[in-house]
Length: 396
Image 1 (cartoon, rainbow, N blue to C red):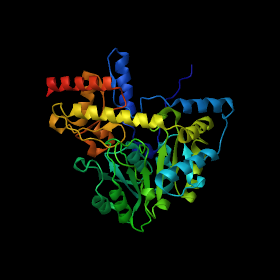
Image 2 (image 1 turned 180 degrees about the vertical axis):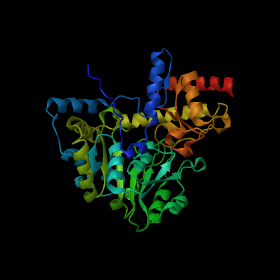
Image 3 (image 1 turned 30 degrees about the horizontal axis):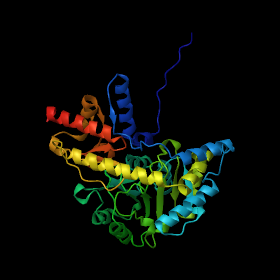
Image 4 (image 1 turned 120 degrees about the vertical axis):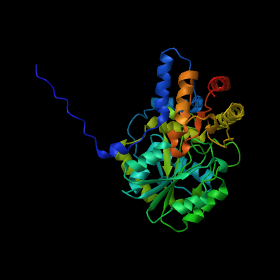
C-alpha cells in the first residue's frame, strides 16, 4: 500500500496576525463542562436571550413561501436598502439615499470590508481599548498599525478627546468609535462626539461608527457622529438587526456610507458572500417598519437586569462596578481581588459554573476587569451572583 506524505501546512504570514473573539471559545469550553454534567450559567456570549419578534419570523416564513430563496443584488434588496435609508435618515436627522446602504451578513463584514478597502500597510487606525476584539484583529491582519485609545473607568469608559487628538498623525486613515460600547456599556455624550468632529477638522480621515447597540440605551438619546454637520461623507455607520431584534442567527447587518465607498464595499461583498439571504432581508423590512414594542420591552428588561446585577456585584468582596448606560454588558473592576482577569474568569467558570469573559479578551487595557452579559433571566443572574459571592468568600 502506498504511503501518503504528510505535507507541512504553509500558511500565509498574515494569518499569524489574525485574532479571534474569545466569547465563542469560552462558550465552547462552558458547553464542554455542561456535557460533563456541570451546571453553567452563561454570561459570556453577547446575544439577546429573547426570541426574534413573531411578526419578523412570520415575514421570513411568508418570504420563503413566496420564493425569496434566490440570489439578490450584492448590496442588498432595493426595498430593504430604501427602508434602511429612511430609518437612518429619520433616527440620525440626515438625508440618506439607498445608494449609500450596503446590506451584509452580520455586522462584522462592515468592519472587515471597511478596513480592507481603506487601510494599506503601515496606515494607522485608532480604535477603542478595551473594545470589540475584531477591530484590532482586522487592522493587524491587513498590515495596518493599530493604535489603541484607552477607555478609562473614571470617565465612565468614554474616550478622552484630548488623548484622541494626540494620537492623530499624518498616517491616520481611520478612527473607530463604538457607542453604546462593547464590553463596557459606556456611552459617548453628544458633546464628546461633537468634539471628535472638531478635532478632525478638515482632515481626510474617515470614521467607522459602530452603532450596533444604538437602540439599547438606558438613558438619554442616541447621537451619531454622522449627524454632525460635515461628517456624513466621512462616516461609515455600522448597524444591524442582531442586537435590536434578537436576530443574531439571522446574520444581517448594514453599513451606511458615501456612495463611491459603498460601490467598493459592494464589490467586496460580491467577491466574498455574493449577497445576503433574500428571505432574511424581507424579514428585515418588517423589523424596521413593523411594531417596535418588542424592542422597547427588551431594552426595559435589560435595564432591570443591569440594575440588579450591578447592585449585587458591588456587594461582593473585591468587585466594584459602574452603572453601564447602554448595551447589555457590565464591566466590573476586579483589581481588589488580587487576581488577574484571565485566571479569575477561568476559576469562576471551572469552580463556580459562571461563564464570563476576561477583560483582556477586549485588549490590554481590559486587564483588571471582567465582562458579564446580562442577557439571561433575573433568576439566573441572581444565582450567578450567589455563586460568585460564595467563591470569593472561600478564595479571597
